[in-house]
Length: 91
Image 1 (cartoon, one colour):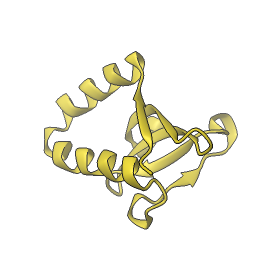
Image 2 (cartoon, one colour):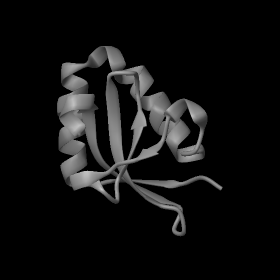
Image 3 (cartoon, one colour):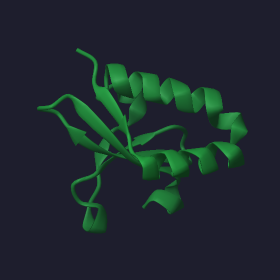
Image 4 (tube, rainbow, N blue to C red):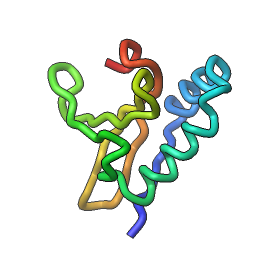
C-alpha cells in the first residue's frame, strides 16, 4: 500500500530553492520521492531516526551528501516532508 506524501507550503518553498541550486539532482530527487512513496523502508533510502533537537523526525538520503527530513506516520500511511538539503543544512 503506497504512502501519501504531504508537501506543506514551507516544504515547497525549501524544495524550490533546493532544486534551483541543484538542478543536477532533479532526477535523483524525484526517484527518491517515488521510492519513499512506494516503500519508505527500502534499503537504498537509508531511512533513520534523528535525535537531539530533531527527535521525532526521520531522514532519507537522496545522495551521500543530500537528505530529506520527514515525519513518518506509519499508522496513517502518511509522510510529511519537512526539509531537503545538504547533510549540514538539514541537521
